[in-house]
Length: 356
Image: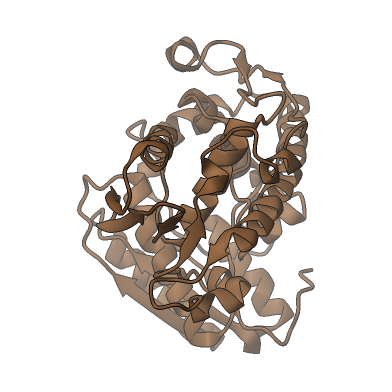
């Protein structure tokens, strides 16, 4: 049984598939009056409208509040774009009800994501999917695998819809999912333990970045510290972004500066993981995959992590290459030069500050 703060609305992300319908069933049994179902219709396949109607009618039967949004992304839309739009919607619903987001991800989803990130050549961050603490994932917290969910669905006659794309090899995730079916449970448990260790390290890194960010904040061009900065946690929890703020530039200029030393010597576990996937995917990833986690976060990487953290507060996620380009501009541009970031956002690099 789920035991969560009953004074907070639970925003359940429900697609209509077996995982999310079991999530709904469990919360209906625990606190039916305190949940809101959020369904996002991606418009990426013909059956999407049927999924939406299925979830809507089930919510009516249960007397549960229902929120939905439909965006016609089209069948060629990328998985990443669909995910971004879906989470934008979930945060919108969470802000409307002042609630928390709950998803139906389970341990097999976690393992798939780690495997996919390894195949794509991940850095250490790729070993910590689902680490956003604004989103609760009860099945992962409770140690549920897919088999546990299927067993509950069968025993309790939970109705659900099957996504036809799950049975195709059109998406990398489906290809990996199929090939991980035969992964020994011991190897799965090893990946889960690696995830837990890396997630703890990631949270420590992010806490340090947060502390450094606060120490770097300056008054903006209007002579004020942005009012939003006074409530950083609220900004973060509600998926909002900051704008019109300045940070001190000197931190990013010298590898041997003092604040970043807080991260030096932070050890990251290295591991070799045999994913047990076929030769086609092994050729992309290597039959034995190094976790690609650096054994030590050196000063330059520490600076990059802080800059990444600052950019995310500005609503921009940068690749490693983009981070290096931005850092190079900070170190080489003349006074009051502009540097463009993704999403049509801009910074001004001053003599002793960077303005976002």
